[in-house]
Amino acid sequence: MNHMVSRRFIESIKKLKEEGKVRSFRQFAISVDYLPQSLSEVMKGRRDVTIDLLFKTIEKYQLSPAFLFEGTGDPFSSGNDQDFRVVTLMVDQHGKENIVHVPVPAQAGYASGMSTQTMREELPVYSLPDYQYKGGTFRSFDVSGDSMEPVLEDGDKVVCSFVEPIYWKHSIKSGHVYVVVTVDDVLVKRIENNILTNGSLKLISDNPYFNPYDVPLSEVKEIWHVKTRISQFFQGRSRYSSLQEQINQQKEIINRQSRLIESLEGLLKESSTSH
Image (cartoon, one colour):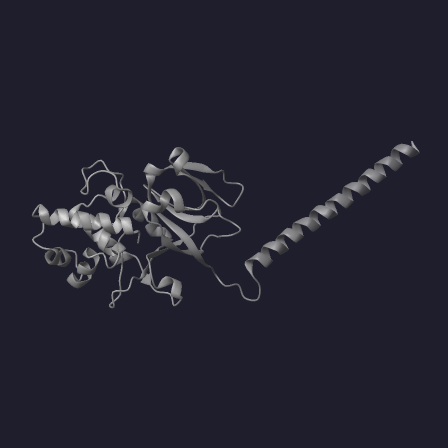
């Protein structure tokens, strides 16, 4: 977590106490289901604030995301901030974050702002054994359609890490694949980062039949960096081998047609010469 975010968080919690909205730091910690001892470490600058604590504070006390992530405006929302979405986290019995999966049927609801209760009831959660998934916030999404073929196919799943809004401007890497959650859709695309130049992201499909298009940052609610693809296993051969075989078959058909055309041209020349 960025240390400036932690400093702004500490400033905000102190303001809550000064204004009498919480009686003590301990009472605040209990109100957001956080260990008072751990909060004490954050308030003393000995550890950074966690994503879970940030989002719970944003949701319960209207802590301003614009102030928190960008240092602009007042610590508490006035209704004019960019509409950053609070990301719901799911944890296991040991307090470790699970990966939340968003299947195709749930993606429209997820994009429009699925409630925490609905997410807990309808979205599956799981964990992966790889060490890289032991720290941080992750989602997985179903891939739908053929816009990202041949790299991603319909039915694949992508496991992604959360990109905090504070890092959107500078850390989104052009040419990398991201899941972009807009106000009404979940999109898996390569990104060209144009936030600093015109305040938008260009979304690019790997399938050349789909044209790139720009999405204004104001329509973006969440961004997830694709880390892993989970795809169906094909017995004995990869899907790329199958694709290559189809290409080779098409090439052979074209070659046969070319030879046939050459033969026909030869016959026409012989016919015209004999006359």
